[in-house]
Amino acid sequence: MPGIDEIADRITSIGFRCRGCGDCCRCVAKDSNLVIVSPAEVRAIMAATGMTWDEIAGPYPDFIDAEGGGEYTLAWCIRRTADACIFLSDGRCSIYAHRPWICRTYPFMLLDDDLLVSECPGLGSPISTDAANGIATGLCRRQAAEEAEEAGVRAACRRAWIPPGGRVVIDSEGMKVLDG
Image (cartoon, rainbow, N blue to C red; front, side):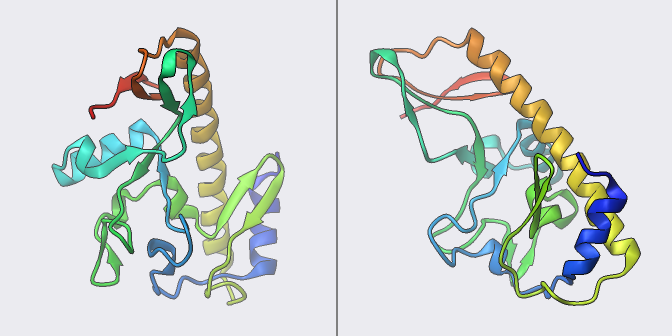
């Protein structure tokens, strides 16, 4: 895995400044604003907002068939309206201080040793060394959090028994049976 300095140098060479356009929060293409969240992130948003789990997150929309006619998925996503994240209000994030890792590090993502960059109008803008280091640090923390979540999901999958005909989400905390 590249170090923070190497990632920050790459971000600096690309350039980025958030323009506050909110395109990353809006549905500009199918699932363009699909924000995957860990149980810890959902719980942090719950604590900050007083909202319930079901008000904040729903199951990742792609389900996998299981034996006995059940289905499962392996992640949660922030709920969305027809055109935007539920936390987009007047063009701004209403949970900005508590936003998920994916939002904190957008438009960047680490995949193994590669820095991936999503489309964003703010790309190519000059960025300070401090800002690039902040994003790079966030990316490394995000990658560690995602690896821990993945390990938890693998462990939960080994213990999971999906009820026949049931729909469940398997996450690092275990298996949650969905109503309806």
